[in-house]
Image (cartoon, rainbow, N blue to C red):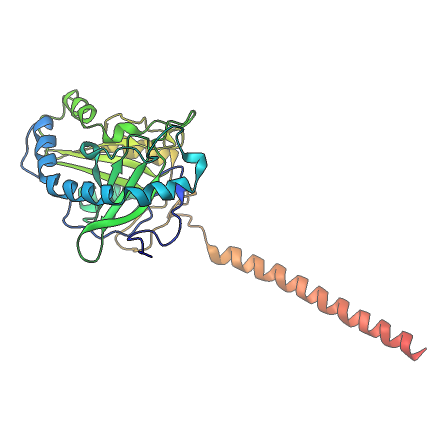
Length: 304
């Protein structure tokens, strides 16, 4: 029996694309010569052509295995579809990076920029016509032939936030062209942020200015409107108010996440552990005393 190249067990489908993956890649999110938004997107797409062709060849060869995996989870299938995954949207694929320091807001406060906080490694996100998203990374051989996840972010499910705009290149161009502060563009990167409700940010650099366009499953948590262009300062102000994190410092390599802890009053896990140890000690002592009393009572009865 032929072994699957990417599935050793049935793949789990996530209701949102969680970005906890470790995929090697080739090349950093390089800044290019400044050009108009439309020209930049066109040139960027040209530079991706060979990788996208490789991706499509691999995915078409793997379609049977992908469909079989989806068939194991009937609740996600779309009725009447010959192929559950649908067509792979080659023109909508996009490379996704992570932030080196997850709390990019605090990093920005310290360094005044976030482009230096974008990891060079990336994976490819491939949307499909049926609303799935297939994540593909490189294997150790350097080929783009490693499927790490199939997400259900774009399934047409009532009540879920529509984040399909993240791969709409025309909408991205129009959003940048509508901003008077963006005359030229030198960098566009897609960055996933698990710390901020798994929001995908489209990072844009224009001159010395940085902008973010968020697409996340819970904009009600982040306070950021999906598809809206924010100067980095404005996005940082909003996220600090809605999703406070403990500040990253270059003098302290530890990264603290969530819950609103601040460096002035850090949450101490040791304090909680001490409380648990004391309580456990009291309970253990009570049990030992009870056992001794019970043994003495039994001995008294046996002597009678």
